[in-house]
Image (cartoon, rainbow, N blue to C red; front, side, top):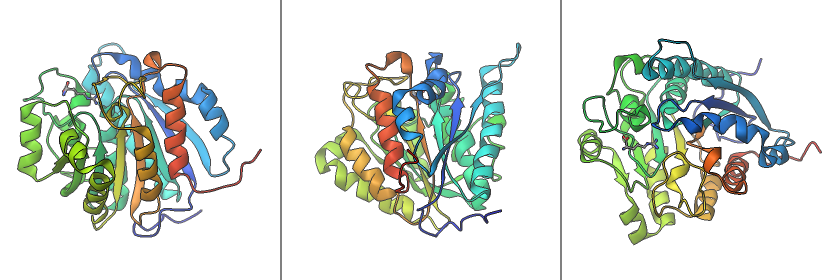
Length: 305
Ligand SMILES: NC(=[NH2+])NCCC[C@H](N)C(=O)O
């Protein structure tokens, strides 16, 4: 049985285990629940699955029993997801969670923090801030709340999957790319001391400089860090298959290049890609991008053929 990888060792090479988290119930429109299965069936995955160091572990679903509220369904999925991610890490593998709406981040990063034993750094790349609490949300949608939960603020039923209290160190958490948010969530992040590098600041200094600054902050977390990438961070003209498209956004190449560099950073513990909505995809371009993002962090390996 391989031993867990110590957090500060270089991230690569390690086997990458993909865990699908098929939740749509955190959003107003549930279409993202089809994301993991659609990607698993796509031509893009078909080409990637021959990679000798990438495996599809399993796909988890939000339970669908009558009488369960959306929050209870998300809580049950996140509990199982946290365990699956922790198991992958205990087996010495690198977990890559594919969502599903962004509420699944509660499970992913709770599982990673639990195995690290201490709160983490996290780079949150997104068009939104996802930092509402039940008291401040305008929509009631739980995919608008996961970052607040991971910082220890939110409904108690969503806070118990990892470390007691918080899963993240606010001082080593960065939100990169937001261009659609409400005042209350921006205020919470500011109060907690989370660095937010919004779309305007990125436009002013360039993506490469903004990304480098973000990585320097999160990678300085003493017990490791993660990356969660909401596909709606990209410009929907390039990446249409997302749950909550917002005008403008990041280019694809700059982020792929950034991920390539990040994959070599010591301390990167896991990766998450969320909000894939296959219903809105056009000609598979979003699935192709997901495959490119996975390939960017995968260890180099010869194809099994
Ligand atoms: N993961 C996402 N797509 N989040 C969108 C959140 C949008 C809005 N701020 C809300 O709370 O409803």
